[in-house]
Length: 637
View 1 (cartoon, rainbow, N blue to C red):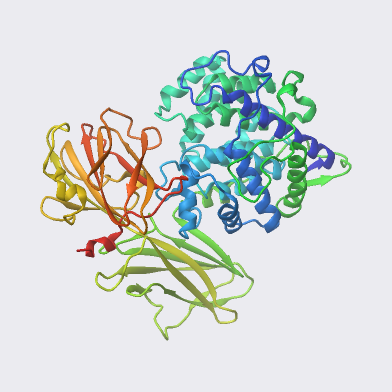
View 2: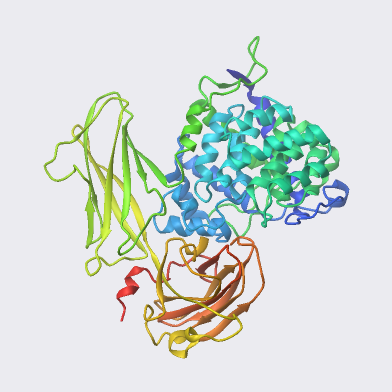
């Protein structure tokens, strides 16, 4: 067990916060630049600089508020409530996650579903907080970071956050960058791209000892069209730590000079070194740019958007002491005086159970109800359509000390047929042994002519236990968005039959001759993933139901040319070859929606075998709108 002086803990938290602010500020000028920036990261050039308002600082304040409100056993439900109450930033991954949470989609589904930014480094940018809250206990920090990152990320976006949290936590007991990276990698699957990138960086840095050459090797081995790539960011973080060799100025300068997600990487690297060195390790040349307050204005509602840095450190320490006393029992203790022969290094943790949980995947939600742990496995996007039933696997785990007999049922909107084999009225309950679990399947079908599929459809899972009250777990199924496709046609610059006034204006219903239905479970990720056909020009069309006339924003991303009409009026046109990535190649423009149904038609050139089109509708404040026609639109005349 590691013993930390409480005074030392508070000093290290101050160092971590200061290091994060310094690193984020140093990297802000080169953030988003793909070319190396040789002069970046010089403190003399940043004398008048201040940390720009940053989403990651705002979300860390939000996490502290959620932890203070929920107590040490913070759950994803507590984080969700805090997001819905206080968050007011709706761009990128935060916007897609916020829309999912508003519709009743629980984490980690909220992070993966219809979110083209799900593997961006947004969660990585705020994960240092969990390391500060769980000092010298990278296991607890990784668990908390994974839970937080699942709100708005998945895959490499979650893995990069886990890495940062584990590094910052371990830095309260270790300082050597190589050793820290060794510990951090224990919490990532060995085959993950994030882990491979970090291992490659360590090897290349050992061979070349030159950040420029190592950076070049990373970008060749892990190419990306998007500067906000979690794999590249994690690799550059490892490079900054190894090249900096426990020197804060050199560490953040390397992060800044590498470009790409320089503010995120610099902030994470600064937090790691700041936690290792403490407040006294902050170089004098950086103190001139350190603010007394952080500015997070415009991203939060109902919270202090200009908190004093001293108050932020105090809140982090107070809540961290609570986390240590609850989550780190037997691994870490905070003391006023160090005991004799106190261990000076962390033991390599046993991470088998953590990695097993990480492998469960983002389509499985978990809720605890009393002594029951309830898992709902969607095995894919949480959608339903006519002819596209939803199949679930439900697992109930007995977390108590007694055997139990359980039965289950699901209720939903009228017209939906719900079947749970073996769980009909009057059937025998399922036997649940102490520490054991049972699994069963459920199928939900929307019968056309009976069920009216809405954009969001609410269901309730009821679990009955003979010796206790009935437990209820709500979940939501999203109505599958319906588009129609026509093509392929010839030259993109020529007009083809779908450009008739009757179709563009919405006078003719969709689905007639020459059109094929195209269910789109995740249109913001890729609308045309299921579109078959040769290269050429295609037309995609759907209808938007507006309950009042309003202006909206339409975001369209394509790897080739697009032309867009709204109610017969051309509203956008571009024709250039782009990366097949919705994060890097999106265009956003205004559309005027009339009250009632509105026809959206997209003309799409496809010269590449990698077919890609992403579409999302937003309000003027950036909130995503689920107004595209669901399968219910099939029955419109």
